[in-house]
Image 1: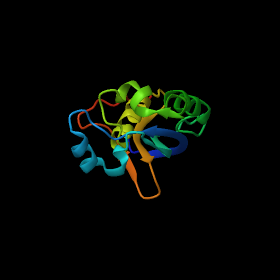
Image 2: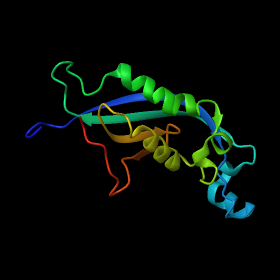
Image 3: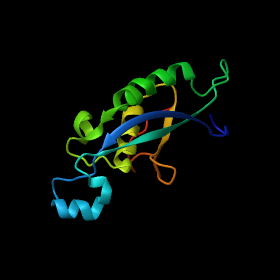
Length: 148
C-alpha cells in the first residue's frame, strides 16, 4: 500500500440504555458531588448514537474498505443488541466494577469492535446528548490488527 492515501469509513448506529454514575469507592455524598444528578439511585437513560470509523485500503474488486453487509451485523451483535434497552450497571459485565460513564462506554465499545476482520478500527465516537460526545481511538501502545 506504499504511497496510497488513507481512506476511512464512518457508520452511525443507535441504542437506548440506562445507567447510574456511582462508585462504591466513594460515599453517597462524594458520588453526588462528583456525578450530580447522574448519581440518582434510580438511574437515568440516554438515546446513544455511536459512530464507528474504519480505515484501510479500497478493495480493487469491490471498491470498498469494508462491506456494510459484514459490518452492520457485527456492530449489531457486539453493541446494539448487547446494550439496547439495558441497564449498563446491572446487565453489562464490563460495568460491574467500572463506572459506566460515556468515556468508559466508548472504551468498552471500542474493545468489542476491534476484532472486526475486514478493516482496521480507527475510532469510536459516542454521542450521549446533543451537548456531550466522547471519542476513543485505542490505548497508546495497544496492538492494532493489521489491515488485510
